[in-house]
Image 1: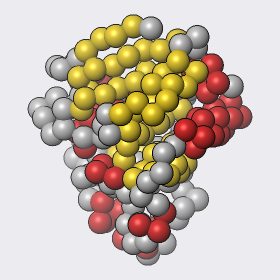
Image 2: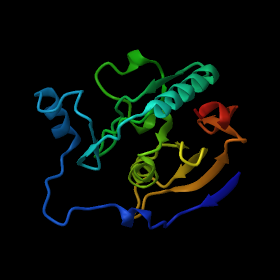
Image 3: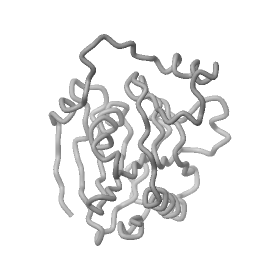
Image 4: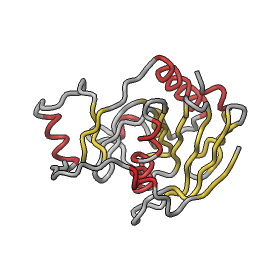
Amino acid sequence: MSLWTSTTDTFNDRLAVPTVSIWRLTVEQYRQMLHKGILTEDDPVELLDGWLVTKMPKNPPHRLATGLVREALEQALPPGWYVDSQEPITLLSSEPEPDIIVVRGNRRDYPDRHPGPGDLGLVVEVAEASLERDQTLKRVLYAQAGIPVYWILNLIDRGLDVYSDPSGPAEHPDYRSCHAYAATDAVPFLLDTHEITRINVQHLLP
């Protein structure tokens, strides 16, 4: 297991930005496109920082890993939280659909809105084809929103990166701390800064 910290990382400079003028959508405009049927739930896109971004296809290892993470978290979950998979969350200019979220309360608490940053204890992305996006664009968005803990389950390198201590809105949003866990390690599962249990990383990998 290794530890590093970052406050002024320049990884967001690597994000591809169109060189021509583009029209960026607000969350409300994106929702109106869904409401009017311009976009449907079957369209493989999500709103990231005002852009419609194509979601990466999910192969069997990704599907299996997502299910394993969900099962492990549900088994350890204390009262007052629930786990969801590949459902939208609402950020300032984004509505990503993380592979796993741990949400405060219960499902009936959100009849007319998606969970937001203050409702989330943990966001997890299972990364293979999406690894660079998860490490850059989504890392920035989640840190900017103040999501307290962000996991990337890396299927390529067979490990788990745990990001914590988000900067919130800043010139260069980022998580100030990251632990890299190998398959042989046990990762602490934290909610509201309290350790709930430790989960063997190997049990999350396909």
